[in-house]
Image (tube, rainbow, N blue to C red; front, side, top):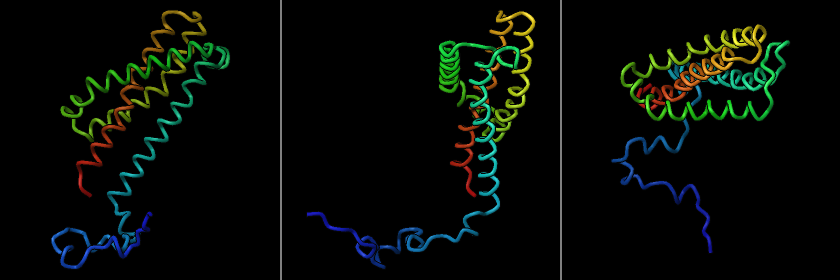
Length: 173
């Protein structure tokens, strides 16, 4: 009932492939040396660094929110942590839907990406400051303001993924 497809049945005749660009290069893969040119390598390395920063930050946020105040966290219960992370994702979705394209049009892909990656520095600094507020006055308005203040740069840091995507799609290597 079903016929198996072989490589010979999928190849184009010579006269049909003349007008199709890159038709002859489909048969043999590119060598790894040619594939990993300098611009491609730099782009992949930058994206790997961005992903490392984002993954490490995303893993530390729930830990910071759950640890007791005396060892550097805020001591929140799992339900409150879920609400905070839900608000963060909702703010990120609304921000991306309304402002991301305007920011990329105004700054360009490269500057948007550099700006977004630079917000990770602020993120690494803000957690000890929030903990200091919690040590001095408990869970107060200062701690909740600090929680809002880490949501803003984390949302801005998420712009880096979209700007990388634009940069990869619209720039030829």
